Length: 313
View 1 (cartoon, rainbow, N blue to C red):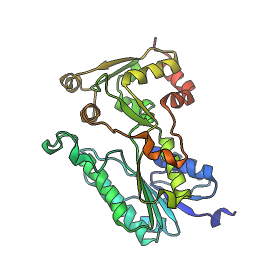
View 2 (cartoon, rainbow, N blue to C red):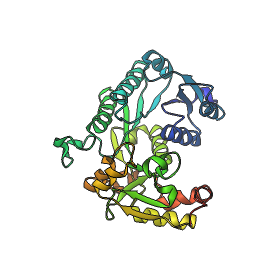
View 3 (cartoon, helix red, strand yellow):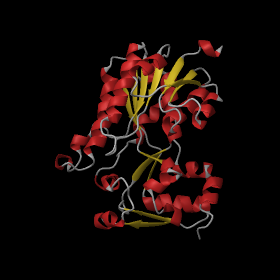
View 4 (spheres, rainbow, N blue to C red):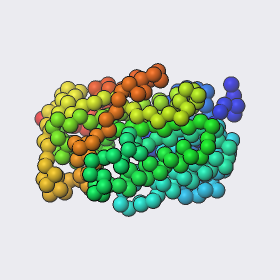
C-alpha cells in the first residue's frame, strides 16, 4: 500500500518520550502514515523523525489555526501534554483543549490521550481537602481527559501510566533521583512502599494498538503497569545489571525538605507512601500486550548503564 493511502495519525510530542514511543510503535505496525507536530522542523529531533518518513508540521499548541491545519486529513490524534508545575499554570489544560478543538474541527475520528494513573480520582485522596498533593497537577490532568471525553469523537482512549522506568535514565534521573549517580537512592519514599512502573515504549505500544483496533479500545480508560517494586528492589535490579552497588536511604519528610535535593518538591514521593498509583495489572491484561518488567528494561540498557555508572564501587 502506498504511504499516501495509509490512515494518517497526528502525533503530539513526537520529539518527546511518550510521543516518540507512539511514533516508534506506529511505524512498527507499518499500516499508518505519521505526521508529527514540531516546533522547529530543522531541530535534530525533528530531522530524526523526518529520516523515518514522518511528515513534519511546524506549529505550537497555542496556535489553534496551525493545529487545525496539522490535523486536516488525519484519522487519529495521539495527545500528550507537559505536566503542570508552578511556572506553567493553565498551560496543560489550554494545550489539551486546543489540540482537541483542532482535531474536532478537522474531522478527526479518534483520539488516544496519555495522562497519569489515578487522574480524576484526586478528590478521594487522603488530605485532598487540605490542599495537599499539588492540586493543580491533578486538576489539569483531569481537565485534559475531560476535554477528550466531552468532544464527541467517535473513538477515544485514555492511557494512564504510573512512574516511568525512563526516570532511571538521563536526563530524568538527575531530577527524580538526584543522588543516583553516587550509587544512592535517597528519597522520602518509605522502605515498604511499592511503586508502580512502566516504560514509555509500552505507552506507545498500547497507543498503536488502540489506533489499529479502535472498536476494542473505544471509551476505555486504561491504567498501565509493568512492574511493582520497592526502591530496594529497584536498587537490587540496577545493581544486578550494572555489577555496581546501589543503596537505598529513606528520608523523613523533614530530612527531605532540609536536603534541598528535590527541585519540584517532595510531594510526589510522599504521595507514593500515602496513596500511590494502585494499578491492577489485570485491567489492561486483555489487550494482547505484555508490559515490560524493570529487569528487562534495565537489561536492554545494560551497556549504557554500565558505562554511566562505571566509577561506582
